[in-house]
Length: 339
Ligand SMILES: *[C@@H]1O[C@H](CO)[C@@H](O)[C@H](O)[C@H]1NC(C)=O
Ligand SMILES: *[C@@H]1O[C@H](CO)[C@@H](O)[C@H](O)[C@H]1NC(C)=O
Ligand SMILES: CC(=O)N[C@H]1CO[C@H](CO)[C@@H](O)[C@@H]1O
Image 1 (cartoon, rainbow, N blue to C red):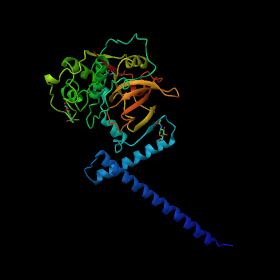
Image 2 (cartoon, rainbow, N blue to C red):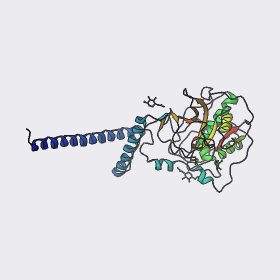
Image 3 (cartoon, protein in one colour):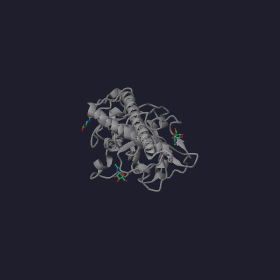
C-alpha cells in the first residue's frame, strides 16, 4: 500500500510540471508574438518613439492578434479578419483616426436635393463589377492623411470618365486635398460633394502622374496644362436610405458613398456582415455588386487603405439588409459625378 505522502509528492510533482509547462508556453507565446510584432514593424516601417511606447503598442498588437485568431477560429461568420497596417491600434484609436463627417456636418444644411437620373431605369444586371469593364484603377493608399473623401470622389470620376470616353486614367487626389476649399480641410477631413463641385468648376481634374499623391497638405497647384483631363458637369445624390436606388446608380457607374468604417479595421475576406454603426466617418466607392453561391447579396467596394487591407484593397459588404440605411450606412449618403 502506498503511503499518503507518496501520493502527495506525486500530485505536487504533477502540479509543478503542469505549472512550469504553462509558464513556459506562455512565455514562448509572448516571445513568438514579440517576434511577430518586430516582423510586422519592419514590414510596415513602424517606428516607436521609445521603449514605453513600443511596449504599449506591443500589448495592443498582442490583444489584436488574439482577437483576430479567435474570431477566425470560431469560423461562424462569412468573413475573415487579418493582421494589417492597423494592428497596433486600439479600435477606439482606429475610429478616432477616421474623419467624422456627420459631426462636422450637423448644424450645416442637409444634403442638397438633386435630380436622380437613374430613377426610372429598369435594366439592372444581376451582377456588376466595374473592374471587369475596365473602369477601375488599381487600389491606392491614402496613408496617414484623412483624405478618403478625395479617393472616393476620384474613383467615381475615373469610372464615369472611362465609361464615357473608353479611357481609364488615374486621377489626382492630391489636387483635391490641396485645392478644395470651403468646409473641406485637406488631410483633416473633407466632403465628396465639395470635391465634385471643385472638379466641375475647375474644368476637370489633373492626372495622378501630373499631380502625384503626397499624403500631406500642399499648396494648390492648378496648372493650365494639366487641367481638364477628366471633366464633369457636377454631381447628383442617390435618394437617401434606399439600397434599391443605390443599385440603380451602381448599375450605371461607380458611386461615391459615406460609411461607418469603425468595424472594418481588420476585415480581410468574405462578405462583411459584422456589427456596424451608421454614423459616416469614411468615404469609399461602390464599384459593383453581386451574389455569392449561397445567395448572399453584397456590394463590391473599393477602399483607399492599400492592397494589404481586405480582399486586395476591396471589401464585399452585405447588401439589402433590413435597415434602410444599409450596412454601415452605405445607402445614406451616395452620390455620383455627371458628365
Ligand atoms: C492640413 O490643413 C488643415 C487646414 O487646411 C489643417 O487643419 C491640418 O492640420 C493639416 N493637416 C496636416 C497633416 O498637415
Ligand atoms: C477564412 O479563412 C479560412 C482559412 O484560411 C478559409 O478556409 C475560408 O475560406 C475563409 N473564409 C472566407 C469567407 O474568406
Ligand atoms: C452630407 C450628407 O448628405 N449627410 C447626410 C448623410 O445621411 C444622413 C442620414 O440619412 C443625414 O442625416 C445627413 O444629413
